[in-house]
Image (cartoon, rainbow, N blue to C red; front, side, top):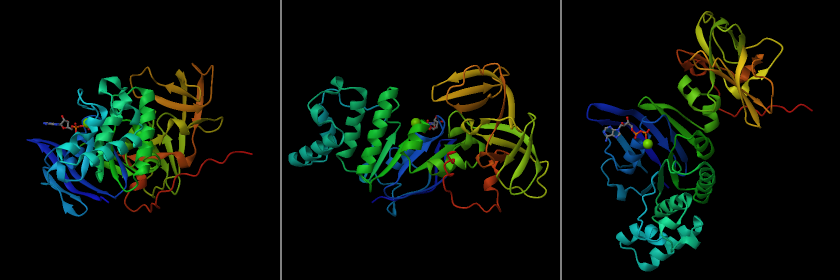
Length: 379
Ligand SMILES: Nc1ncnc2c1ncn2[C@@H]1O[C@H](COP(=O)(O)OP(=O)(O)O)[C@@H](O)[C@H]1O
Ligand SMILES: [Mg+2]
């Protein structure tokens, strides 16, 4: 059991404010992922929770108890870092046992805890090896093992997979998911800039930007209902396209005349009086499809990337601006240099005004989030 509550948490280094207004309720057993651009304060926030960094303002509570001035060792927390920082002259078992020995645990307790961590992390055959005789993935598992032996209530991970190569990252990510599943009542907070890790591991993602929280929600909620253009662009790859235009008809479905010439129907409500309002239509590359009818976007393909399962089409890469990107399922040879017309389902479109999603406008009756129904498969 470990609920965490952050209220109005702030961090400054002298004059420089790094974080402010951080309000966050984390429920016992949740897997929370912090994402955000480099330097936005992810590690700082994690280190404040761990007690490795002083909290400049606000309160951190764990299970209702104020933790601001409690030393790290008494918070029931263990942290795993990007650099595994193993003791090179100690075996795997001794690396994992070190903190327990310092804490004065008996030989039998140490043996039992390290055996158990070894089993959980498939490190049993390597317990007597030195770190230099392990792969990067195994070394990171030892670092996780050092956390497990202490049986903390809260696990903190700071980009634990960043030093691993791509294949190992995937394998270790799955191991972390399984580890969490085996400890349903342990709370985990995980920092990453890798959105696949965020989407696959998190119960809820916290998007940090500009010193504050941009949005908190389930991964698919952030994907389908981003609160602003920043979150829209940050979650999903390639990033959501933003096409500027003007509202021409308001209502439950909004018609937008795009500056590029197309017309879009977005299933997002606008009100009488909104006609003429400047907006950006947001459309994800994977939601675009070719059409002979009315198009949201028409352009000449100036680059294609064939990835096998999908083909990426790039438009406007030469102007120096942000290119429009479409992602079509399957293989599409010969599209380079062709002019194509693209549309998307009105329910898949997003609508932003001044960078903010109109879905979250005051007065809009937004039902609780449910994932968009899977597209019907034609018979
Ligand atoms: N000891 C420090 N003194 C001054 N500024 C710092 C210190 N540590 C971190 N920062 C600043 O705080 C910001 C957030 O850093 P960090 O939490 O490491 O970002 P992230 O983990 O999201 O990449 C950065 O702009 C960084 O320069
Ligand atoms: Mg960091």
